[in-house]
Image 1: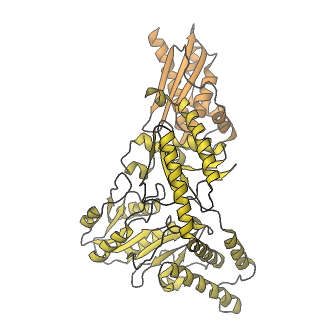
Image 2: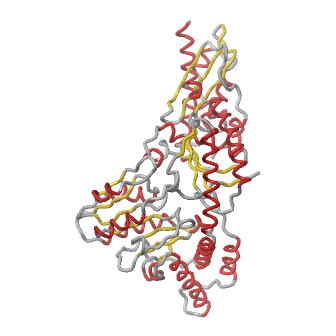
Image 3: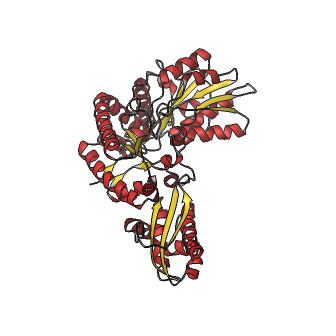
Amino acid sequence: MYNEKILNEFKNPQNMGELKDANAIGTAGNAKCGDILQIFLKIEDDIIVDASFKTFGCVAAIASSSIATKMVIGKNIDEALNLKNSEVVEELEGMPPQKIHCSVLAEEAIKKAVEDYKNKN
Amino acid sequence: MQVYLDNAATTKVDREVVLEMNKFMSEIYGNSSSIHSFGREALKHVDSARNSIASHFNALPSEIFFTSGGTESDNWAIKGVVNSAKQQVKHIIISKIEHPAVLETCDLLEKQGVLITRLDVDKFGMINLDELKRSINDNTLLVSIMFANNEIGTIQPIKEIGEICKKEGVLFHTDAVQAIDTQDIDVNYLNIDLMSFSSHKFYGPKGIGALYKRSGVKITPLISGGHQERGERAGTTPVELIVGMAKALDICAKNRFEINAKKIELRDNFIDKVLKNIPYTYLNGHKKKRLPGNINISFEFIEGESLLMMLDLFGIAVSSGSACASGALEASHVISALGVKEELAHSSIRFSMSKDTTIEEMNYVYEQLVIAVERLRKLSPLYIAT
């Protein structure tokens, strides 16, 4: 059901854990539905210089979180706000239909983190 | 090391069974309905397999009907009883933790006007016998309660249920798919009228099972198109599968006592070790009234599918009650029915042992489990929150 790319991302996730000097945090999902994605961003001059994640969820949720953090590092916050879940899916070379909501949660968590930053600044 | 702990999903076919089946694919390959010598030879073996299977359950050979497996038998038993009943109002009682083959069949019948009562279970997965008694009324045709649960392994008080049904004059069907290899089943002692089972759960081939139907019980056929199985179930008799199932059942019955004792010891040691040493872990199901090979534990703060897949990376095959693992949106209906927090239902893992599972395998699984749980908890935003 999962392709190699997703399984590899799950096996070797990048940017795991809490980012110590994060200045923006976004959370999506809830434990009842079985997925919670938390994204930590370090933003300097509207540029995302570092990102990390913590995820309670399935293989697709963990892979989506990992790839999404990789995708936003180096981007400015407006670019990050425009990140679409379909781009996350594309980067993972496809996802089972019933797992697409995991990529949506990744998009949502990134957006919430950027909004968190905007609210603070 | 590779460890298969998903024997409740399916088992490895016993070597002796494979050898027996080979004979019926390459040598005794006739259609048992043919009247020539090839057919007669095949029929002889089908008859003897039927006799042997019936004897294991203290049933008559004429009460055993071969089907494609548990799902068909469940469908047939329930729809068959409903369709053959003449009365206007029809009522069926099941439990909330039945297999989907029973649950969804009843959902379908409900849409057609059949009244369905779904009994609650307690936190161990046991139905309440008083609630069952209270639920039976003049319109009740059938009580269908599984012998043992496929996810949490809880064994229901089948004898008591059978007694109640007999006293009240309603039919009793049990889905015994998970129970055949480890439980001693006498359909007369237990007052079972209909019983479904499936060969691949007890080291036999896939695609074959049976419905036990007490003589005199009327059910309409589900599959039409031939006179096989005394006109009750059409379709060419799969001789090699039937012979394989009979052989597998023989082997199970022979070593049942020793294998059960071994599995129970491995099971209880593993459960104790996990609950004692890995914090925030909870056993799902009953401590004692559970299948010898079933272990089901919730690992709080971890989603079940990710734990399943991480164990898979270590060569260990298990299953999970999480929504993700099943492709559904909701977590296991069985774990949810126990009244545990929904989060914990998403966090459940089932380890199901076979007769060949060793202590070395269970030790390896425990070691890898500790690593996997730690790794995933480090990743979990919920773990920090507590």
